[in-house]
Image 1 (cartoon, rainbow, N blue to C red):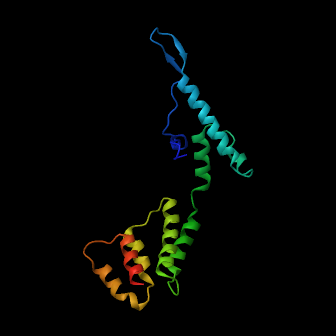
Image 2: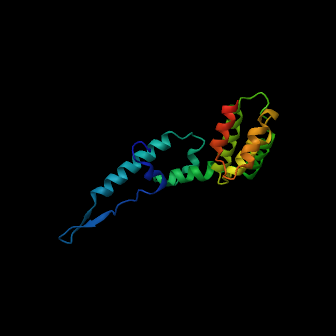
Image 3: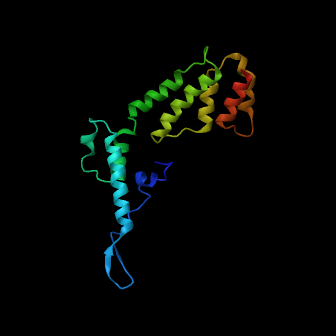
Length: 167
């Protein structure tokens, strides 16, 4: 969708042109831009519906435009439940570096934070970095001290880079 410049049909930023326009003579005629919009919108909606599983299709009854189909799908499936968000936070607290490489360790943390952020609960850089520093072995203590004592706040990728380089 983005590659073809059609994401506006998903998010509603591409508005439907007026169905009827007035010519210079004052005559009301069908707007050709409206017809093109409807044709493309219907094609995209058909494409999306053809890609949806048969279990989901009944939930989309009544959604007749691309934006209404997409918003229905998002509202039903993009929000994690409170239980799932709590479970993700518990997983964060239980992650241990152990024998993982620094890259694998930090990637696990990032994946969980991305899931939490996707449901509307973004995490601050400080909290993300604190989670990374939380369970590091003693050989990383000097790096933890430098990051913790810095007057300028580190960004997550800067802190990860320091530790990956140290490894």
